[in-house]
Length: 364
Image (cartoon, rainbow, N blue to C red; front, side):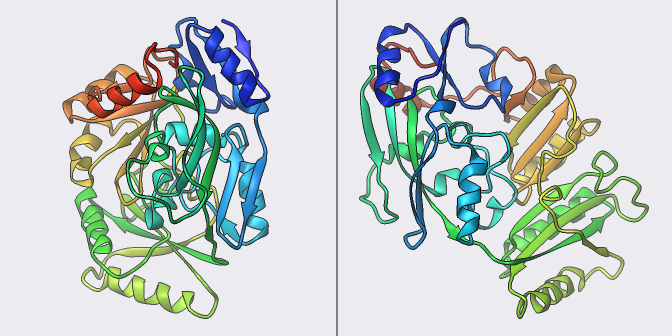
């Protein structure tokens, strides 16, 4: 296995033209995505780093794909702004890896995921051609947006070299609450109520009983619904009061506690220990059946129950559970033959894009 570390687009183009098969990595924060490269040349993009252009007044930022997430987040924080899709693994991941794997955190509940905030990209395709897709402004022309198609592509259609995002102003204060429920169905009913209400939450996660430190040792209530509200000193307390009253008005026995708000609390991957870590996109109504099959594993449900995170030492059992529920999982860590487990993804459009951008199948 040969490792290359290009420092420019020109060097990267030459590598593509001279190689039979290529696999791209950033900082290696998601090792399962790089297991089955089958002797392909490894291209490390961490050398193609740095912020190219940041316009706080226009709420846009352009960075090289190998830039660490923490570098961009720090620059945004200095101006009171942030990436609303809440990148995961912020201390280790690169911007390009975040886009390629489509990994967003709990705060994406309010405004959306990576695909909602990417404006444009510069890429090198499987034939060594360098070109731009999308744009650098929020208002852009309509039509097929290839930059959004690159989200979750795992580098198989084109190699991203630059990425432009829209960013948002952040708020100064947060309050986190925990609502305890005896049964999963009760917690899901609360989620459905929130989704149909006018309350704008910053994040909404669900922690199962026992297996998560948030719940460990709790005597009253098994499932904990984690709700985070964001705002300003003059309005946030009243909003928290109204939201709490609405959540408890029909259930006098529900227990509510104020939680210490922290980055660790809202990191859905915290304490998910196991050889394999897997992300699953799941409709909340399928959550009870799926959870019953994986209840012995550490897990957490994010984004209002739409994303499941599961840690396991038995990847075959999790694969079987996913298949029986008609779901697909993306492995982030652990030695696997394929990063995707469960039901295979059949995407005719993706195959057509692959044929156009990488007809020789160089990018793996």
